[in-house]
Length: 452
Image (cartoon, rainbow, N blue to C red; front, side, top):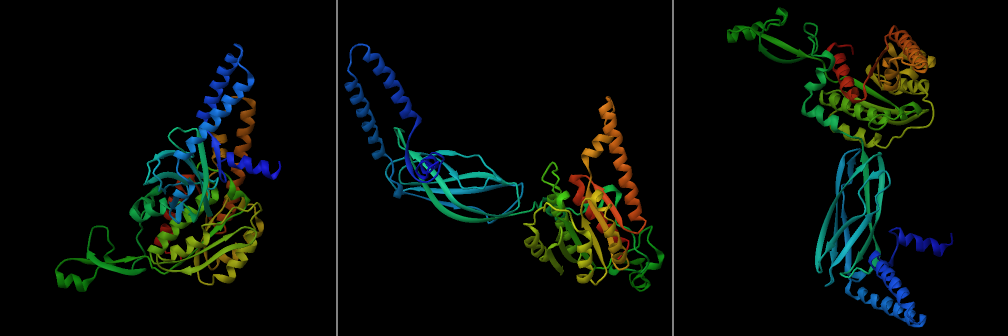
């Protein structure tokens, strides 16, 4: 396609500038053509018919004088600089018509293809007014995006011709992970404690940080009674302790090939990032230090340990744009790196694919060393396809073979997991929608049991 033809084609695709005939004008010419063909059978000359067509064509151009000039129109876009993946976001477009003529419009905003939209958007603007149009989009992929142009078409009252112009409006949008589960934890942390019966457990007598003095209730350890306050108030009072704060939590995010497996909402990496941010929120709110490390064949991102809920923004800015790499993860290299940067005892919480990890014999060598100083826990997403195959009724020979192969894979995975757990390296799997809840529950359980 030559450059001139390409430019003409772009104009028809809501690009660049130009003037286009509308469907109404084409229908008018179609009806006239049929009428002229009928008249030609009665002896009308072709010269007269061509002259009449040209007269109608040039007469239709008068319609352009009753539509606003391009310099009379201006546009502005209002969009949030930050939006969450998968959540609806409103964008407002403000169009000003400074002419005396009204117009009917339709426009397409320069939103990237990874956003859902409902273009073209249609409407009408009266002369000398400003119209504010609001539409909704959803970002399906994390990352940085530029919205540079807005493609606009409008026509006058007769609607025979349509003018086309492009507004240059540059906006930068950052798409971050979905923080819905993080907000749910901040609003109601108790939901995350009660999953699978995980509850606050009592500490060893006198261990942990002193929290407060309260009235003695049935079931309290008599050794925690505060005899001085009991004598003052003439009521049995007891000391209450809570897990020590200031522990170190290191969250590891696997960005290797297997984390790109698609789930119902996003892929494994998306769910892992959202769950990791929820765990980080819980730890930071409890006064612990949190560091974050994302890796595949090598370390992609490392955020040193920090304390306080404001540290969550530091973590979010560092990992919001990490992507899945089409390579196998090098667990040995990242664990070796972790040994050099994390000297203090911490909880190593890794989000990865359990079935892939248990087959990495080289990682076991490094983890045996790290286990002496750190507590290791891996969290992964259950393979729903494998579970469906196992639970499927073997009504045919093919289904029976698939079921037996799925059961064999499950047995192999359980056997390998048991080998790792015998070394003190815990591994758990959860459903896609329960990944964050499970990870937070186990984190709080580890803190309550003073395993660090």
